[in-house]
Image 1 (tube, rainbow, N blue to C red):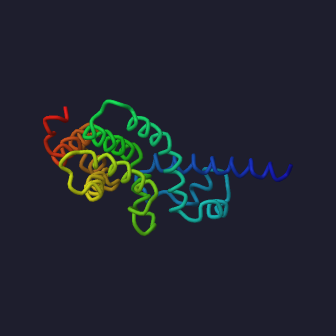
Image 2 (cartoon, rainbow, N blue to C red):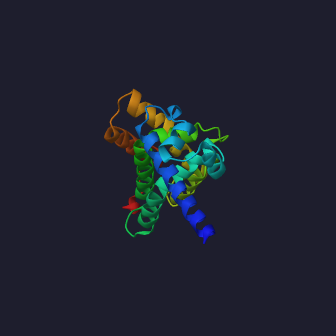
Image 3 (cartoon, one colour):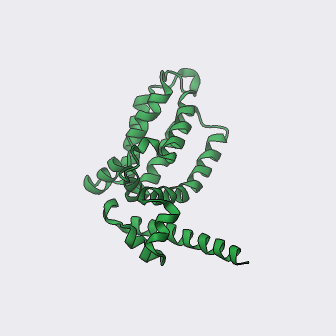
Length: 196
């Protein structure tokens, strides 16, 4: 019985930590301003609990992103499997979904890119987006290297760039989404006559 109570406490603590970290990153003015101490206090757990459960700041940030991104992933998978859109439209939709997520979570995503994990390209969420995008690009006529093109398109929506454009350059989210759509159209080129 005691073992089950500990597991329930561990689950409750994990959820409290993720919720506290998520709220603090969302409210912060900078991804660097959120400390492990603040997260522990907001979650009502000891700082040692954070390190035992998540390893380090990068591990905690990765867990918060995973909890936030899973509903989006499910929606993207369903949209990608639905009949109708052309491969070009699927590419546009994937990038728009990723951009909207980064706009809404720009401090969290900037923190992830700067969390000392070595390379943002090694992050699990980046690998997932890249693979989804690469697979769609392979079906777009005229794309010579889907792997590189996926990386290049994702570079256009790096979290630090998104944060700079929205927070510093005061670009509206709608303006940024429109600019991205135009850029994607330029990269993909004009559709072939039989693409519809």
